[in-house]
Amino acid sequence: MPRLFTGIEIPAEIGLALSGFRGGLPGARWVDPENYHLTLRFIGDIDERMADDVTSILGERRQRAPLVITIDGLDTFGGGKPRAVFARVAGSGELNELQAEQERLVRQAGLPPETRRFTPHVTLARLRNVSPGDVADYIATRGHFPKLTFTSDRFVLYSSRASVGGGPYIVEAAYPLS
Image 1: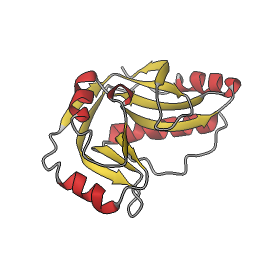
Image 2: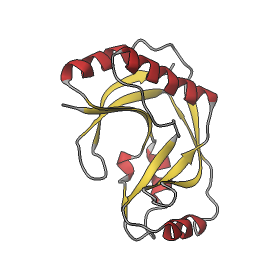
Image 3: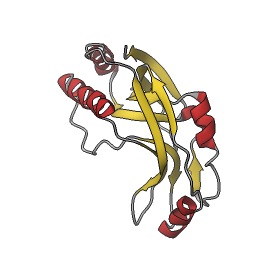
Image 4: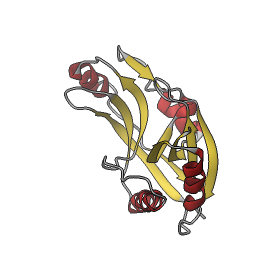
């Protein structure tokens, strides 16, 4: 039973820049730079037949121009119980439209709706038992975050093994945006 999700790949040079933010937060499990990605739609553990249906239906999306993606800062999920540190992706109408289209397509394939609001990001670390103060200090001491911009000309369907921290991720299918 594969665990699937769609996403945007992070180019190596952007991954290298993001990897410079690794470290300095006790209790963080840092994501390996080769596993950085921007998740569009988590699909989850599904059977092979549904995986084939999802792979096929994603090919029915409308044509789109390549996406310009800008990563513009650090943030955290979890508030008083932080669970992840991430690089924030600046919102764009085109990115939100692509994500909404994928949501519609996977629901059309028979999957339940995603219950979480789409927050475009690149996970840098997963946290367990890390204090909100330590996370706030980590982010505050990273001061100036240089905007990192790249163009993506495709999105991909990833598979992963159920593991602590995710990865390794395998590209199962690629869908051009142009």
